[in-house]
Length: 121
Ligand code: T3P
Image 1 (tube, rainbow, N blue to C red):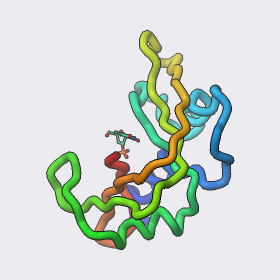
Image 2 (cartoon, rainbow, N blue to C red):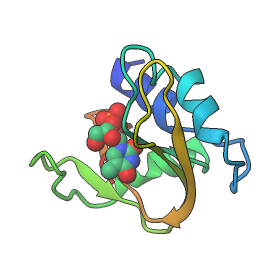
Image 3 (cartoon, rainbow, N blue to C red):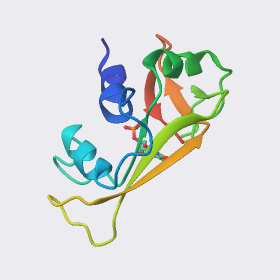
Image 4 (cartoon, protein in one colour):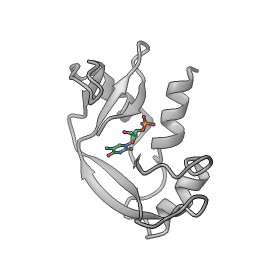
């Protein structure tokens, strides 16, 4: 498997946990998924849908990504997600996050194998 796809799953997929996580969810998950190793990643979203459903977003029409490339795709339906945002004053290695559950359409970038490699919004 290509590293981009593996990294996407590591950083953004959490299919099996229930939605509406407790307030400690991001503190635990950002650490467990290795996003607090060298620095605290400032914003990261976990998606609570099946990998099949998230991969299927790659079949939607291409749209422009924030970086100007055209390999982004928007989900047709809204998805259960949890946004993790670094709290003000949080300092590495003590990365502290606000946990915010939401339901919305997501935008992913897909590679030539049509698998997600980046979460754009
Ligand atoms: P990655 O490329 O590993 O998917 O935009 C910079 C990073 O922030 C990018 O990481 C995706 C992540 N991000 C989210 O996870 N959720 C968001 O809502 C936004 C805006 C960014």
